[in-house]
Length: 129
Image (tube, rainbow, N blue to C red; front, side):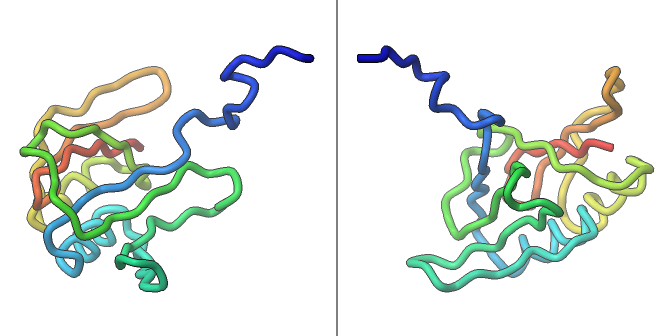
């Protein structure tokens, strides 16, 4: 009998999906659509409605959705990073204009630039360009 370790069963990307709880689906769909400049597709065929972040390659991309739920206290839950088109400063402005908050300066790393933000419910997220 062959021995297996957990890593034998992991997909290429360890993170494969993210769920963001929000208190107001309409407000949050508009917020995230404005920030990432891409509509979130509303799905209502399951037990609860959810709105999916678009992906150019659904089979291989890491994606996620927002759903009606109880967010963690502001800034205490996990942080997901969302890709935006450069310039990052434009996306930061869209956060502020749509009810969110930019909570860090721009951080530069070899792979690019990012910033930490809070959505209208206090969920932490990053913008990466």
